[in-house]
Image (cartoon, rainbow, N blue to C red; front, top):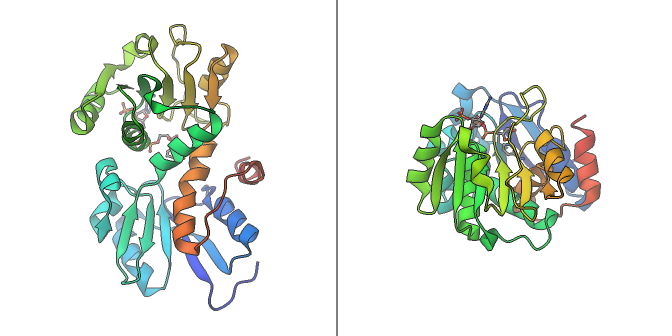
Length: 281
Ligand code: NDP
């Protein structure tokens, strides 16, 4: 669409950034609302992040999303960071405030919870223990969000046990580290199983985990969304567990940023999913 000289500008900073689906996501909402605005890709090398962020207020840019590899590094360059973002230790959304300050937020955990609520009707974090596979950046956002949503116990199984133990020590109580080899045995009383590793992503090895002990009413979700139905979700669905794919997390995490930059509260619809997915092919 054609923009005017008054257009609001936002975008995403990453390296690389060309693969990101966020242009399709925010572009869909901009078109749907008929907003005089643009959401652009900003390829920024890791060494250039701070300079790029400092340029945002100078250029009149409303804010940006951050993707790999910038989410953690950005924290040091931000002027204000809310408590949730500080606990997660990474920011994925920056809003340029009226005074020019850079405000950092993390909406990945919000996106995760909203996606579960939308995809698994009646889901409640309080239903029972959650098992989280992985202890990287996505896991941190998921674990903090589950903790805040009321999960009574979170077990983290990670290939590198020390990383899981570090997370449990930092974010606990109510969080336990589990050896990667014990991941299947940790499922016996689980109400939720989440894969936050990159296993199952196209080009990566599949996630191997025996689901025999997983209760039939447990919900299974994956943060990987390429492919949409990962081998984990396929195996879980085949035995009757409710599954929620990772695309919803991506779509929902974009909502708070869009609302802050463009002043409208967007929805996640099937039409949006189809539009964004068409760009993942
Ligand atoms: P990180 O690099 O921070 O973490 C990767 C995790 O995967 C670590 O726990 C790592 O374990 C584990 N891992 C990697 N390879 C293996 C392996 N061969 N065997 C066992 N474990 C392995 O990545 P992120 O947390 O940033 O991202 C993880 C995934 O989440 C990516 O696919 C990303 O695209 C996706 N994602 C999706 C989002 C969404 O909106 N749906 C949002 C953010 C991320 P170890 O500690 O031992 O290295």
